Length: 429
Image (tube, rainbow, N blue to C red):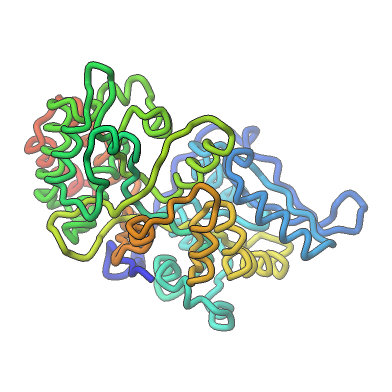
């Protein structure tokens, strides 16, 4: 198993935690009242917050299987739009919502809920179950020596590539590329007159900042960002050379990474492991015929341990739940081996992984099975995407704003980095 490189010495957070800003009004909050009954059917209703339920098949897969094993239980998803999820959930919990199970979309929000005493402390219970196959992910949920959630999936970033585009160009498939090699290959594969690029870098700041911090063993909460300069310069250089779409175009036209890759508009793209399920689904539904595989994300030097970044996702029990014992049973199911097998069958990377789980995952129809793809699936080091910190939301906003200014050319990398340091320092004082 890979090891997680923590962004902080500990994810314990001292001091007060500011509430996330709420949007909308109480009338917008999902209807999640739950008295444990199910309309007189004799079944217990277990409510779970989800996002984009109809397009996130792992939820239905887990819920249906749990209901089958527990015929006296009905699971009711409380679905929230992905973009509004954390803000909406914050509002719900602050008003005493009783939804039984809360899906922890990211670590930053998780720590806020935990420190507000809104989640059930699972620390003692975890000592009674097998967490070892997912221990690296569990470590990320440690808040001051306690754990309030159980991870069920763990995503990390890999390099996707279009095999046909490489074949047509007579170029070897990527295998443990350095960033210099990646840039050169992207240039060779580009056909800018046809709006076809050797690479696509999505607009999220993580594609530059989280990856750079991971591979330089740095902490984005610490306002010393000189290490980002090389990565921003490469991104700008590749835009100028037209070996990847420029940031301004991608942002203003709201380009999706899936459309770029699945329509063979980009030969290479680094993206989270979650996208493997997306490609499989698109191919199964006839939306694309892309011939694809994955490789390790490029590294600073040849032959070093593969370092990438990622983030786990977890379920937690609402402290206001009236069905805590049943909710705990679901958490054990979803985060354990049984849930992991179901997730792997869906194309989702489970946190609980062993050889059998990996074999299920790579046994999916359409999944690449070459040695390089399998090696990319098990990187030596996965750094956490963003450190857990009470000042995290404010710092995240600063880094996002400066990221965009650099990549649209309004600031040089030097100027943008200087502004990041100055602004972040003022936020954490």
